[in-house]
Length: 174
Image (cartoon, rainbow, N blue to C red; front, top):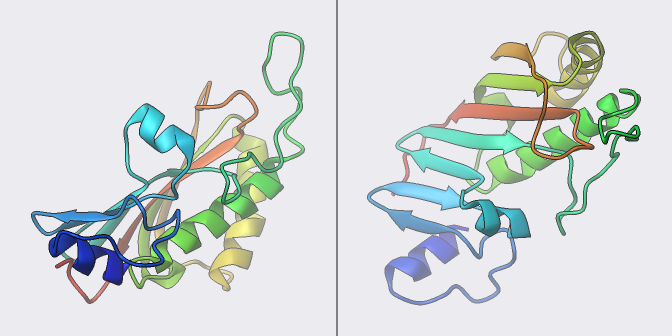
């Protein structure tokens, strides 16, 4: 990513830029990054923004590197989740994606200071979050502020969880 940013400043493209760095640009000491999945361009947003020493991650969800949804919830007749059995798997993949995006800025989950967790079912979400957060942060008490919110709907019908992150690192953008 740093090579992509440096090359962009010089007016070129970085050799070997992959889907994760293709959308990376730097403007006014703001560094941005994308996964390169279709909905980023379609919806018109970036996955992450770094300003000075702070990294902001847009709502992360459970998808692979090609943008295919991982562990989709089974849907009922009206198209709503029939149950929340896939909540834990969606949490796990969401954290994997967050770790991947943070790494583009030289950050890890240890740098996260705040997360906002959005779930369709708070009891199921709270239970899954309690287990997966400890696993992903590698500690029984992750050292970041965390809030969980029950919502009526997320971006995709089969989606059960979405998480935003804020991280602070020692190296400012630019």
